[in-house]
Length: 268
Image (tube, rainbow, N blue to C red; front, side, top):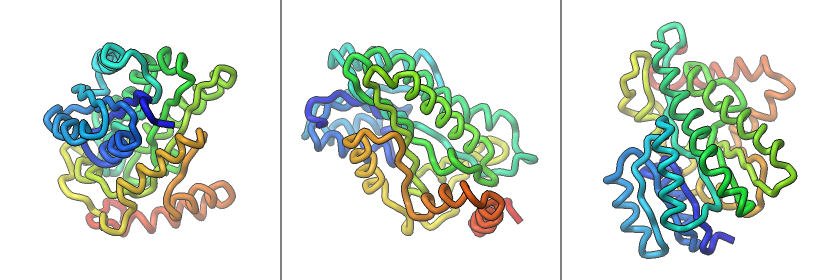
């Protein structure tokens, strides 16, 4: 189903975004790569051009004009847009009582507003194709994660935005998919912000025990093929979301104890 489809992937310079772009390219889709690091995008573009047509666009999704330019560049290059994968995002780790408010604003600007901006300008073109809008959230978009207030807030906001968008377009063929990986091996934790807005620098978790970005991307592709409304990944992620429906206070305690085991955790 992806042959000659035009797909924008934001946050395509690493992690799930890079893996998803690679999967789509190998299935014959035409790919528009978006991220702030144009050097990394061009390297990936050179690699994927062996399989398909690729366009690399420097884009800071927190900037509305960048998102508008991203969509216009796609239409100028390919003449249409079938799928938007809102994947760009940043994380954080700090107790709210210690957190500078500018950190939460930055999380909302990138994660939430980046999704809103890109979707706003892409939507008219996707509607013409009866295509798909994807939001990559997190289990943190279903259940708050301690020491990640800004991250959880932004992911909950994306969930609410896309869930509402789906309902608004029930009658015109738009597919909206909320995609929630559990802990996935990527560099998002290395780039996570701490209380003063500086980067964490290294992951506090064992990345080798997590789902790979490549496996995560294959689930994303499969979800799009089946036009699913929601995809929740990893056994722990599914257990947490389902258990929380019936035993929320128990999940609070289990989650706290699980997260405080992270190396250097601010939870005591």
